Image (cartoon, rainbow, N blue to C red; front, top):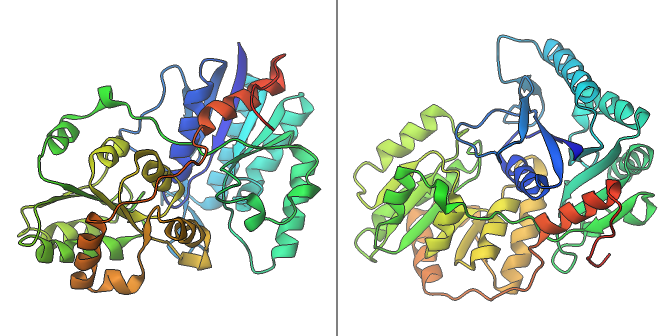
Length: 395
């Protein structure tokens, strides 16, 4: 069996990790897989059987996006960087993969060049195929021309294949990266990477929550480092909704939410018996399938859950560091009638947010025909690099 090493670095939320692991699920039948996790470990995160996970000394970013810092505050960034680089080079030497998949880089994560350039140099030296795994929309920069020139140089130097996990009918990559035609490697759209439910792995808490009969309003913000305004707004809206409509609110704050914020939310919602606040479930899709309304941010994985289930949705885009990715995504969905876009003005006023929730519960979202077969098509494209097969999918 061929071997594949998958590198994933998440520094803010957990969306990159979730999408990467879904891709890995589609590859396990054809590859022996070593998964490199460079971000903070998430307790109870579900990993496919037989996948070897190597957790590097974790690095995250500060809330201003300016500084990388070790999750272990007792260590210096320089020491952690050197350790990580050595671990990666040792791992590629001992594992000897036929394929190296790198998530996002060089379209993002270029602050991790200290370890990724040596890793890819080692991969190319031994004939390993290198693949870039990329979401549908990438972050733009103030000096976009220079940014895109660097991407082209690195892609053309190191990569054999670019897999864009999206549907050009919804978001062509050219919307956020204009030089696709200048890339020398294979370039393929795979369709969106959508999660599959694993109902046999529901926890007791999940089963209890999903057994409630009242209509469910599902509130989630991904990893939880951001989106606190939305959580606070929904706690406030819970008071207005409690006597107006039959419902229960299931809120997931995310595993990375600061302790102080989590307990403030719990305290503020203490007198709302229809509001249930938890940190994290690995089975969010199961809740989305049962929910009557999803209130969330507009990250990639949450959007896929909404498209997969067809649930009513209110979505607030994350705009920190002038990042337009989520705004672009939810604006397009709003235009198509698939979801409704929230503004900070809605979230800041609990009564106004409650009115948006009531109206959304009575609406019917438009159905979509976007390509959500990204897991299977990604596996076919990667197999074609090292196995003597031709992908049975359109280019």
